[in-house]
Image 1 (cartoon, rainbow, N blue to C red):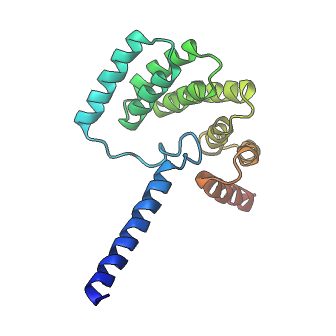
Image 2 (spheres, helix red, strand yellow):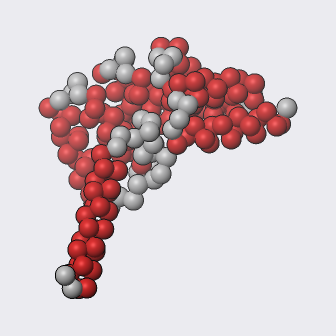
Length: 185
């Protein structure tokens, strides 16, 4: 075989391996339920409006579909339309009162509109109703740490989070925050 053919085969093989790698990574599930919320998505406003319109239309036909409520709420959070997110997540909690994500997302939206006490009580309710839902503990710990300035409670709740989610992208950040709290004692 000549050098040109070998070079082409090598290039094609590397390209194929790279594409397979990309495909496998894209199939991986998120590390936690809100991991995609941690990095703001760069969405085209026109695409976002279209997605909102489509979801609102579908909700008229499927008002009990909690996945649609959550998806639309996440779009509102991403767009920083926090008042709309609050309204939507309130309705989602009514539609699916046993959905931990809806309740915690309501707390996130409430906190974003500076309704800290209501957010706090929502996170407390979420951790009482859904003690195995890690995100509730995380959010409650963050409120205690940064808004209530109660490091003892923050430490307790952040450690609860780590018990449930010891190995995800957020866990490292939580461990760092726990170390900061302990260093401040």
